[in-house]
Image (cartoon, rainbow, N blue to C red; front, side):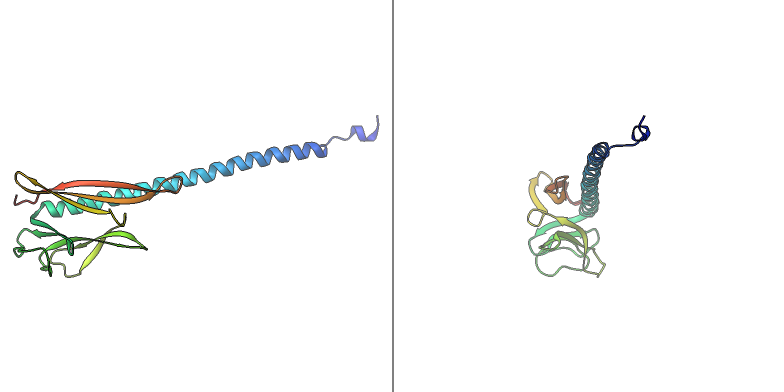
Length: 180
């Protein structure tokens, strides 16, 4: 027996093959990690958008259902008269401090936002919801129901899916003011 044959070890080719196999396994694990991160970010974005929409819809529907009068004005937004407030004669012009309003605005940086002018608060319009679609984020449609003016409010938010594409998510609710 020669001294070389009695030595155990790996050849250069065996080491290269094991290195390639290890790199393929690591690349697969890394790819899986990246995909899981994207899925988690997408799910988080979707859940956040759904929660924000539900909260805003809850606040808006509660306030509007308790109102004695609700009207839609392009300048002031969705204006409502809470019970016991100064009687509303028209929606346009300056709002009485005892009235409430939900106003929509859009900008390039934040997209669409809805702010809430809380009745008798004196703090002005406070942001209620952001990240809405800049053009269709806040829609109010009025239909003449038997009992009065039924309004359907639709809020349309944006979220990113797994492929990082912006998608719409919407919630709608109907409001019939209390006095109708």
